[in-house]
Length: 474
Picture (cartoon, rainbow, N blue to C red):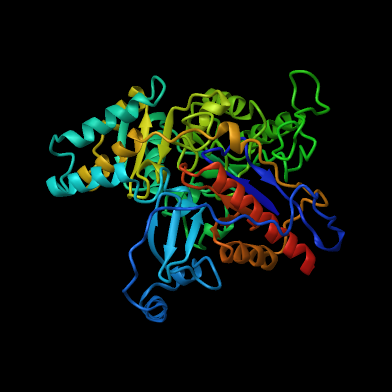
């Protein structure tokens, strides 16, 4: 079982993995009491009383009129019927309060209905809902300038879209048109979208369909230093490592060298001598919070550029301060991509995405015509601009101190039914988290970045209680 933490914006440095298997499990450290659960942190906000449709009627409509895929995506055996949200809190139709540590799949970056973002949206709603970029209006230009100010040179050319899949789709087109090459490489376990084009990029069986998807996409081994062939719990760069010491020689990383060797093998066998691009999330999100060994991305970028390709950073889940130490995930790897894609936290839940690139790539793209009806409309730009204006105090000095118990019996995934059992119990105790991972082995914790230390304490107590309960039942 793997637990992905992104507490208070801390993503890169607070990812931990917990392995638990059957009767071989040992007792958890007494540092965490299985019975000492604090009260849920207080909240002064009072939600409106729910007077709408019954839960039974909602489920009936969901089954009768909504595509069955929606039912398949329902998170819990006993669903949460959400009524209202404020900052890090959600309330259901019965008035029960939940600490939301998944934020609409890492999307609500600054908090549900954040007062400043809400006020900006209301003002724009009264002025102008929609027009397109065929006209010159303030909101898009104000936002593009503000977003570009958060990007390092020469990444200053902005194109706005409606989603992350759309942004990645466009980045593929830009890369191929600019380089004149076709083949694109991604990492195994990656998720870059579910559109017909981006399905080719996505290397994750659960999100693929048995239909022809975009050709020219190959994948290489993911440099997973926890579950991969090289690394393990004693690897310096493994998220379960605590001392940061390993057996590699000074300035060398055996795991990184092996994974780079796999990329070289892919370049030598699976693609032509010239390629269009290399796509990578700075930390894999849906694929299970996989962190790469140091300098892997830097060396991968060099290999790709030697073959005429551009390097694309998918920041849909790592951007906008989500890693805590940097505004963009790629900055933690000391690399500079040619194209950066983003969505989710960009609009705090408002549908929006963006592709930011260099003047050279943008100039190539401008040789043809591409138009997006809703990309960069006034409402989207106003909301996204307000999100950039909001400043959330950093929790780097508090959340970093939390260290859940780490049991290493095995790196094999916990059975799905056991994961779901823990997942459901955490919800019943008032905390909403996510789940994912290539083998369904990951609990995903990606809260709005307005959470407090008290919220984090509460979650860790709840989670440890649920783990204790699970182990006692087994």
